[in-house]
Length: 441
Ligand SMILES: Nc1nc2c(ncn2[C@@H]2O[C@H](COP(=O)(O)OP(=O)(O)O)[C@@H](O)[C@H]2O)c(=O)[nH]1
Ligand SMILES: Nc1ncnc2c1ncn2[C@@H]1O[C@H](COP(=O)(O)OP(=O)(O)O)[C@@H](O)[C@H]1O
Image 1 (tube, rainbow, N blue to C red):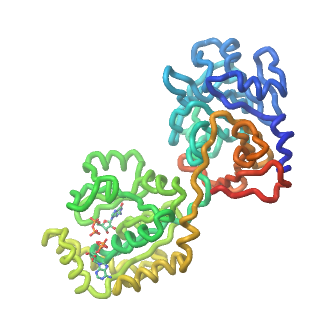
Image 2: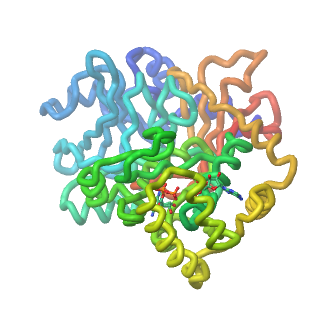
Image 3: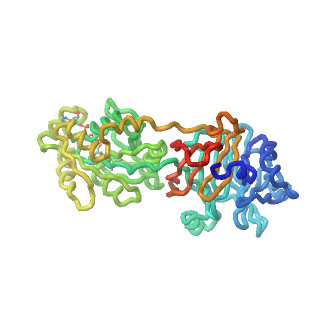
């Protein structure tokens, strides 16, 4: 049996936390009895019973609610995750310091998980806790609460207070984003549209912010996020942008979220940005492929720009002036990986596909990307090395593989303030000898 499934279930290290407290009792207490409301020691990852914490530490910081909470012990601290309100369970954090007997509400950084009806939590190491939301699909189930990673330690020093940070777990290894640059009217948008049309499940467009007015055919949130300059400047100041630049008299920028939204869907992100933006991304931590699109001639560029009919004469003149400077920069050392001349559209598109490794036949395999799996509210979690075993519900002998999953963290990378990527997610068949795990995504 893979990981000795039966054994592991009996050694279940922690519980699903939700309104039906009996289930936890059923799954956990049957293996190790609770001793007087203190820590329940279950293998590597001890868990508190939160209701008993209330009795022990009734100084008001901790919610009195019964459900939606897990308590995880790391060193001399207990991290209590979650709280319930009238209508939903939020995922708040409180820390109990066992040395000083104090409760602390930490500064919580990163993208927080949305409230869910319940979650389980398990210690991964002394730096982070894995939180698995129930009743969601697997693309929104896995969250890492970082309590002592390098990023968190740095923030603790900076803020001189207790800090924790969330990082969303993303299944699969997102391929490198693609940055496409080139002068206005060269055909960047046309080539990107063709790629997205032919490979809808493979590519996603990074929707930039801009202060320019929308064209008649452009939709807010699809072509751009059309934004007031003052708002955009404030967001830039707040560190929400991966890069930004003043282009043709307006402000354009790629928000961190614009790239994350695409990668979270397991898609490869395409950025249509100017040469200054490409330079900024090159200097950032985002590893990307940089492609410059060139016109066959300056005259042809002008012809296309005029034929598109979207700009005033003044704007066309400005864009043509800027085109000269942009074309000069295409050979800047170390900036662009590929230069493509967009003369005949189909020929250029074929070359683009080729350099992205999209040979004939790729389409069919990409279209068969498996959909996210539903994670049930009622699940149990245990840990074996870097693998997390998740049992979603009662096993049915006829269909066991649908209920048992493995989250493999061996290749995980990244983390707060961004995403934790590289997770692998399998379904397993407990009746097999473990060699036929099926990769779900
Ligand atoms: N740096 C940067 N440039 C962008 C961004 N979004 C668009 N651009 C560039 O801004 C320039 C003007 O874009 P747009 O107004 O849509 O006009 P078009 O290039 O003629 O279609 C183009 O070179 C785009 O590549 C962004 O987020 N950051
Ligand atoms: N290879 C090509 N040959 C002729 N016209 C083209 C070609 N590629 C794009 N176009 C046209 O040129 C105009 C500008 O293309 P567009 O994709 O909007 O450029 P960009 O996004 O680089 O500003 C559009 O009207 C488009 O249909």
